[in-house]
Each structure stands twice: as C-alpha cells, then as structure tokens.
Length: 265
Image: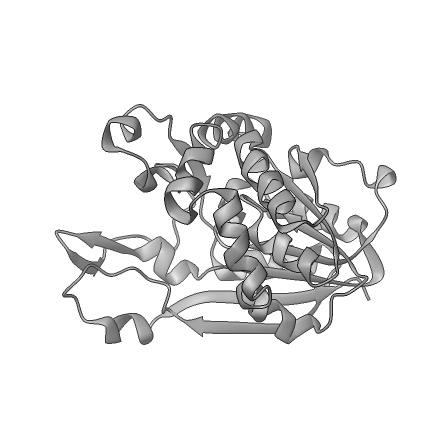
C-alpha cells in the first residue's frame, strides 16, 4: 500500500458522520464553545507547559480533527491553521471557532500535499494523538514539517505509546497482552469516533487502514529528517479506557503517551 492509497481510504473513513459523532460527544459547537471559553488553557495545558505564551505565534495543527485544541490556542492569541482530510471535521471546527468568536484557518488536504512555498512558516507545529499511524512512511512527513517551520520553530509530536497501542487489547472485559510490538503489518480498524454513533450507523461505516509504528521508528525518522530532538517524555497510561471493574492501577503502571519536541536548529 502506498500513501495515496492509504490517504484515500482513510479520507472516506473520516467523512462518515464525523460531525454527528462530535455532537454526540461534546454537544453542539455552540455549547462546546462555552466550555472552551470558560478555560481555554485547560485543553492545551500540556503544550503550554512546553511552549509558553502562544500570543502572536503562528501555530500549525496537523490532522487537527474537530478543532478544539486549535480553538483554544486561538483564544489564547495564536494565529492557528489546521490541516485535516475530513470536511466533516472542518464543519464542526469552523462552527466551533465561530461560536467562540475566534478566527481559524482550516485546510482540507493531505498533509503531504501541502505546498510550503504558499504558506508562511510556522513558529509551532503540533501533531498529536493517534495520527502517526495514518502514514506509510514517517520520513516524508517529518521532512514536510521541517520545511513548514521557521528556523527557530518548535515541532511537538505526541501520540499514544506504541507499547500499549500495539500490544494491549480489551478482551471479554479484561485488558490483556494480545499483540506484536514488532509487527509492521497494515491493519483495518474502526474509525476512531465510531463508538459515538448509534450501533445501526456503526455497522455501515467504512473502516480505516493504519500502520502502527514502534517508538524507535519514530525517533529514527525524526533524526533522518535532519530535525534536532530537544526533549522526549513518556507519560503514564491514564488515558487507557479499561472497562468498569478492571484494576485502574494497571493503567497507571503502563506508558500511555509519548512526546518528542524537536526543532530545525
């Protein structure tokens, strides 16, 4: 499978009732905007701890989905651009931005098709949470990011830790080891938001195709793209949604996410 084939498949997946799914999860854009307006720092505090004040900074949120992080950054004074394959994600994000009374640029396009010569360089680029697996090769992605950043820009890669996402499954209500960390196979999965939709609608959805990466593959791709790794963090697995009744202490003993902060210089 090449990148074009994967992107076309996943574009179909992410344009199936995504707007309805976000309404089911967060309420209408107007209602969700009230929550974000009450405390815009809350949803992006993890990033603010690393980059500080974003007022006046140009921020690129790649695969920015429904736009909640982008809207929060815009509320804090950043000039934010989102790039994503889903027009339904854009619809929710733009309505959310309008309700929050902030400006947001949202481009529906494959990241690798972006023309850096047509875009002013960004001070901050964020790529987060369940998106790296949509690429068949990370090297072109990171090279693209490098060209989209200023010389002193910061690139933050944050994603689910592959030890958990590649090896752990919930089977019969229990979290068990049931995967191969070293697998490089392409895998069919349900669209991430599918569980938010009625069961009858879920059964009609086209599935996505992903390629899960080992942590070393992510690091090596960054290095080979001539980006400079400044910092790496691994956080506890508190995000892991164990079923009710299973021991939550297990999730706190496992890595949940990792973050790598890089720059051009």
